[in-house]
Amino acid sequence: MFNFSCDWKSGFIMDPTKKQRVGYLLSFKGLDLGGEQLAQDIEVFCPWNPSSTNYKKVAMEGTGKEKIKCTGVIEHLSYAGGVGDPLCVSAYISGENASLISAKQKTALTTTKIDALEWWIANFDEENKTWYEESYPKDPETLKAQLNAAGGREIRLMVASEPTKIAPGIDVNVFAIYFEVVPAGNSTYALHFATDSKKQFIRNWGLKIGTQAAAAMG
Image: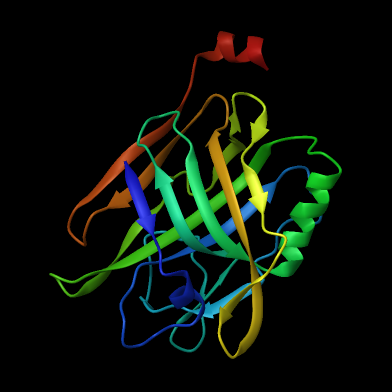
């Protein structure tokens, strides 16, 4: 079981005195939103500003490449480790993106397909005194998935109706989102995880069932 609790407030407002785990929802597209996909409308300073990352979907900007653009800042990501187990994500997104999803839910979702899902979690290795990449989609770098439906009925996608302040005295509101996704049909993915800067490993997600069976399902 993988459980990554991120310091989401540090994800928005970097504390130079702390080296906390931070995570970013880089892309979340799908649900038949058409041209109104969730935007990468959050730009924040990242506590770790490597000259390059293994996960090339991370868009570092600024003079020293210290800023990151994303769709949301992750609070928690969990995954049981099996090929069909859901990825469960809670994060904070902008009011504009929250309104987009809420409006779609009110008219009933016509599809649960996620066309593009990307995330990146970084942590600090206290023993070796270095930052490292703790979790991201490795191969391919963008996942296709679908929303998990508990018992085939309840779709696991929730957006808060009330805003959350990033910090006292800062007039910036964000909205909590929670979703669960399972692999898209007939597809496999390699997910990168690490327990410290020297221990990295891969977990396989999804499965393929053969061309004839896949054609029959399509």
